[in-house]
Length: 100
Image 1 (cartoon, helix red, strand yellow):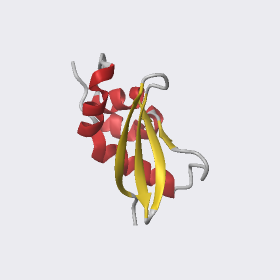
Image 2 (cartoon, rainbow, N blue to C red):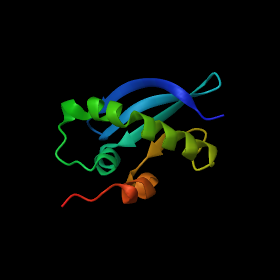
Image 3 (cartoon, helix red, strand yellow):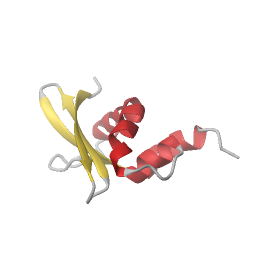
Image 4 (spheres, helix red, strand yellow):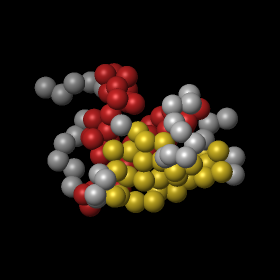
């Protein structure tokens, strides 16, 4: 059973990540995605800090799917958040049509 949707915790400007949670049954799993990963996933650059949560919401389904996959593949430590980076989405990004 994949992780279930949790809460969006916010944008951390200093770390340049959006933090969110997922649920594994009743256990809260801390997660984060880098802004670079979101930019790569969406194919955008120049997203302003105040626009990051809106960007996360547009990409939320793909982000949460990848967080669940990474969690269950055992690619994370129990005492650390599930951290998503651009390389976690390399296959998804390669399928996106290129802009000319």
